[in-house]
Length: 117
Image (tube, rainbow, N blue to C red; front, side, top):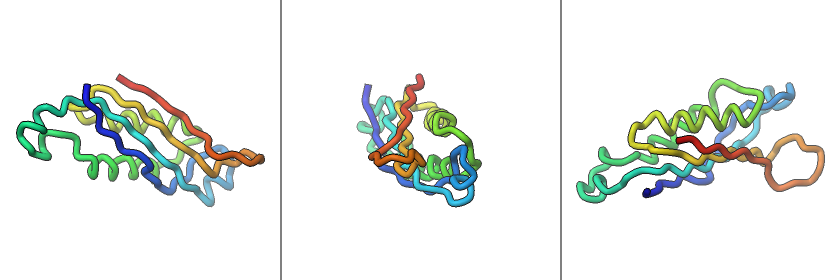
C-alpha cells in the first residue's frame, strides 16, 4: 500500500487535565501517515483522485484548535477518525506530540500514537 505522510503539523490547542493547560494552551504537533492507493491519482494526475494533504492539514488543525479534551489519547483518536473520514484512506498511523507537557522534569517530548484500520 502507498503512503501519504503529513509530519510536524504544529497547532495551538487547549487540551490537558490541568486548569493552566486549558487557560493558556500549548502547541501540539501532529504526524499522520495515511495508507492509500495512489495509482488512480498517478495515472490521472488529478488532485481529486487523491487525498489533498493541504485540506487534510486544515481539518486536523481545526480538531486540535477545537473542543478541548483531557487526554492526548482522546485527541489522537479524534484526529485518526478525521483522517479516516476520507473513504480513500485505508488506514492511518497518527501521533500527537505534546512537547510542552507539564512533566516537571527536563524532557524532549511526550506523544501518543494510534493506528486505525
